[in-house]
Image 1 (tube, one colour):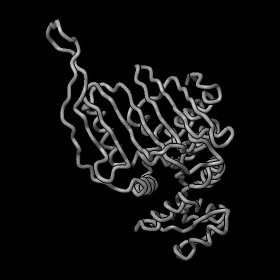
Image 2 (cartoon, helix red, strand yellow):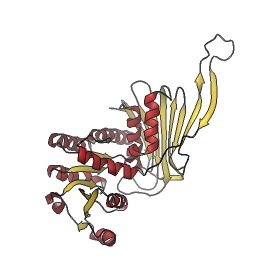
Image 3 (cartoon, rainbow, N blue to C red):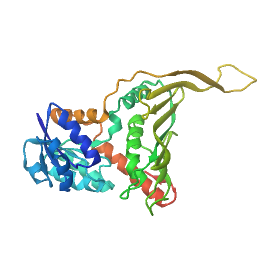
Image 4 (cartoon, rainbow, N blue to C red):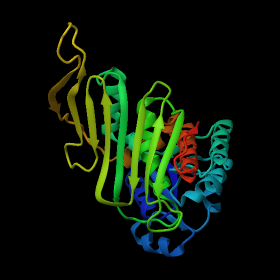
Length: 333
């Protein structure tokens, strides 16, 4: 069995605790949080795990092979650094750090020490995202023109980060994963309506070297709850709607075509084909992510969402934050 510790017993940390405690190949040895009231609240539910308020017992226990860091974003870097220095593998939640220097140091440290550094970009482990990647790789969609995503709802309104840092890591990680390349220019517009200097709504644009573009709408001040990704290709278009209970993926055989013959009429023709709803076998993404982390610990294989992937997301977040500050001025990457 693989010994695991989870650091952070807040709302998201509790999900990690639940998943790892249910895995037969895992022994959840420690649950760590600096707030003793959080530990007291879950202690009865996990009697097999030790409750600790600091890292020392975890770092000193050779039976702990991997540590999951699900605490506040500001704590990710210092905690992950301690864990890596102790020679243990790390699954750190997104964003992996709040600046490029810290994220790059984490990557370098893990590579030099031969440790697993995995970033919790959850949607990469979603079965629909896996299907989208296969469709794009096979050329089913044709040449990708653009992608746009919507991640909006009413609340939770945070005081420690804006909508960009709270929501964008999800969409950025998926876009980079699907396209397999990094943007060359980033721009972002946003406004703070509820709290001073904390943007409630952000429109983020990414431009790629071959002309592709992606737009991300982020907000916790919206009447709708949307978790939607639309991909427009030269052959087909697809929509991934994660709020749908069953029909999460729809493939539209629609597009614009140029006739192969001379015509005095319209040069371009519109194609309206069928809408296909494939059967995608669903698994809980967080469980798939946890199982992959354990697999990486045991096999020493490179994670699907490794430190370098997390670093690229942080680079874009930093550039987007700078663009926000400069009222949408484009930032080169």
